[in-house]
Length: 501
Image 1 (cartoon, rainbow, N blue to C red):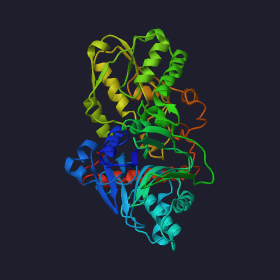
Image 2 (image 1 turned 30 degrees about the vertical axis):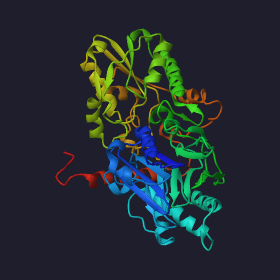
Image 3 (image 1 turned 45 degrees about the vertical axis):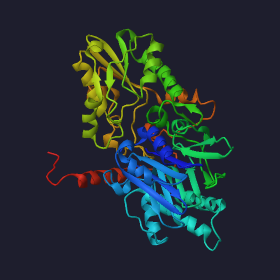
Image 4 (image 1 turned 180 degrees about the vertical axis):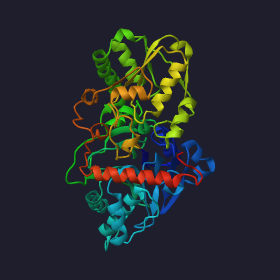
């Protein structure tokens, strides 16, 4: 899961892109990058780390021009520790082309082979984003061959060919040197991408593309709409915007996990308030708790900061129970879910959360979290509650049990890492040392999000919950190969003297 920004403005965009990336920092903390354009030159800076650490004053001075794109990285493919895989990516032809990608391709190996054998293009990293950029570069070169310059129609021709070749989840922004900024979204609309606009005092329009509305409105633009599934948008250097649907078959199936965890609560995606969706999740989860246990056993409801707070507040209200903040969050530690490596996540929980014994002492506590994925974080949180004096610890998840890998850009690719994949609910409770675990039902989660979507959302990608992959190309053999590749990558990353003993 990553965050992307693309801007065409009437003044330098370096500070604007930086500010927007800060607003998307929750979507990726491994690396950040920016490319701007002045004349026919690109100016690029990217590095590992948080946005505030990657960009210094000396870097910002060198990022010249009124067009730019940016990226925050959460690695799901390629080498986690490889700086070369920080985005945006660049190729020098046609014209000079840059790309920033949020999502994950599911036919990367096949396309990588085609690019080498048929298109004579070289891929230098393990990133599927570099593969996607080279597919686009090749198809754009074909579309403008023997023509006197490039126009928007050539970009749309290329995008129809790109969509025909690649599969998976992709919401992308990019730039053609001296010509314009573009954005496009996969035919299923799995990953979000929105369009914003600002009009200056002279009536001139400038445009922004971003992964979430909070990054648009937080820099002074107005959210216009979501980019549609299969749609491509071209904004030339003068600020003229045109768009076209570039896929034969499209359906809106956004990732349900965006509403559960990834998106900021103050964002609106597909016309749906993330905050309102999480409140609705609390209502349906409260009804499930009423059916599953005696509510009188619960003394207090507590959220696991921050994502689950709206659900926990609404749940407590629905059950008529006290709501308390028992954990204090250290805001200088990143999101544990998107941290690479189980040991890193486990260690960071106690760095991130501090329990207040006065709120736990002698009480039966219902902890509410957005989800339980690997169980590592949940186990540490339950231990913290018990160490702080809780008599009983019940654990409720605003999301259903995560039983299947997500192959569309969320780092939960192996079944063996998912605590619910081969355990019953009672066994999960035992594994995380909770007295009881209660999961949201999938039908209730879907109903909760739909209830605040104003009729726009009819279906979702819920593959990590139900194993149904909307792209239609994922089978057991694919998942087996993915798991084997991940195991091999882990072994290769180990120091020579490291063993499993």
